[in-house]
Image (cartoon, rainbow, N blue to C red; front, side, top):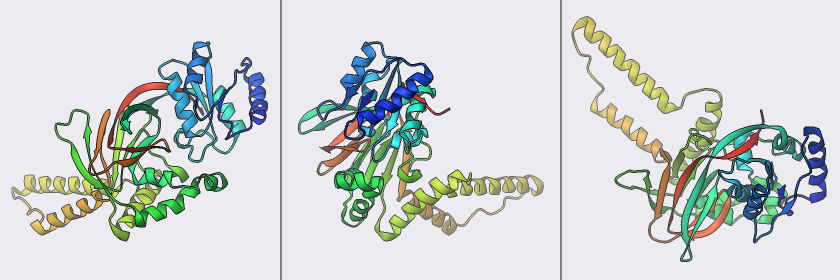
Length: 352
């Protein structure tokens, strides 16, 4: 058990763990308490070296990330007791976030699922650092929002505390000029965005889906640039995330672009049928209609861009350094970073 004493009292956790040890046939657990200087990585390595068959991380996303870094590619399973503000990895894995008892039960008796991990390398204050991540990292507005949220408010109201900071960032935040290179692309792609995100999974707080195509075990990252302009841009972005990505996707409704693709394919099929039957070509759409269609596509792409997927993403920030966050923890201001996938590097206990 690697636990964060700020998030949970050991006596409470010990009682729950002892009950589950007896119920599921586990031996007595060894306990490690994290500190600011040691968030859990070396403790997890020590547990693995000592023959542990299961390492459970009890704390926020930072503690879970640190413990995961200590057991990466070890073959030892990891359990999660989510006790943080965001609990994003637990949300994406559907691990209970509102019951310590149920989370411990899943950690000790759940199914084992292998997921990808990420490694990110960046330079902060002249020194190069390498960190692991499980959910997503971002440079720009999202990192500034996390850094500007009051810790006491987060303890009181949870992830809702980010709302006021987000609102302030909408009106006072600035865009960053950045470029990113995906895998073996010959040329980097330029963007002028509020934030650039690299995600291993796509579900945010409140069940919002930012990256519908992001999967924890596909060996790929998703890259998203948020580029809203003005109130109308933010409204279009909100519609894309809340309605298209979250609500309609869960209802099984294809996105608007998919509907357009289906309509185009059916139109072409009708044209081909008419040509074979009559020997004549139907007139195609006028240049004005085609221009309007392209304008609509550019407007949609200008709001939320899932540019591509890749195993290696290199992001460079122009002008001045920007804030960087890793799984919800800010790490300072950087000129860029390189993120690489470690496929199926972590074995996790999840609900059946």
